[in-house]
Length: 292
Image (tube, rainbow, N blue to C red; front, side):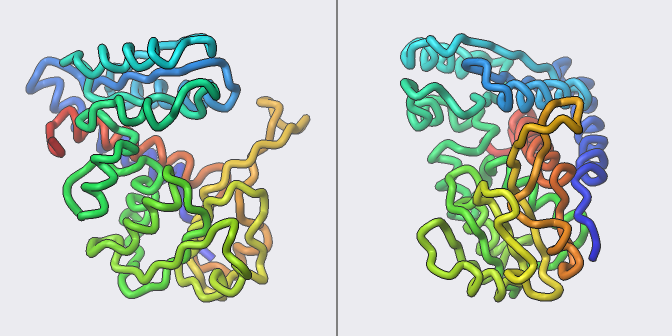
């Protein structure tokens, strides 16, 4: 078993991003600029946004955080996004999910200009991704691709099973792994909550990507010997053992699955760190006008 170490890879890639950001500053007199919008005070969202802002600073980006109470109306939020869309000094916009129930996440996503959609969720970017055209890729799947590239893992001709069909991870991941690209060129099966006997499919996976949101859902008897296992799960549980007051668990029973795997991501220290790198790479590409 070898570890797909998100901490090691993310630090390596952020060093490269910082070099490119410094070159942009030298050539244009401005830094890449990411705007984050946070609605309410969800603990997880606070943590994720703080990490994104901190990483922007680390690689030499400017960042701006707009915070709003959960009582903000949908129209007020959409107006704010529209004003940021029009700001020529902004390269990327992210609105941290989840949003309060009275605000449509779809409306918010579609309001963000595709040219600044560094989370990669806008239908225009998803459509371009599906057609294998230049686009901003959803940050978590993009981070997984970057990790596979960095470790030189060949995916062509492999059977990739994706467990979970969310618009954020599962669905775009399945498309990316099937595309005529590297990484890619897999035969892909996508499983979800209505799939009978998921074990039947997971046991056949050369590459198993799990994003179902259930602690230790994948057990050792569901994974074949030598599989590559990528755990996207981030399940929080209260814990008195940590300073933060909670502990993170993946969707994969790491302790028992790892010995059967050829490669596996840990939680924490795996895909979560690569998601931030995907976001930074998209913001850098926007600043360099590489996509649009």
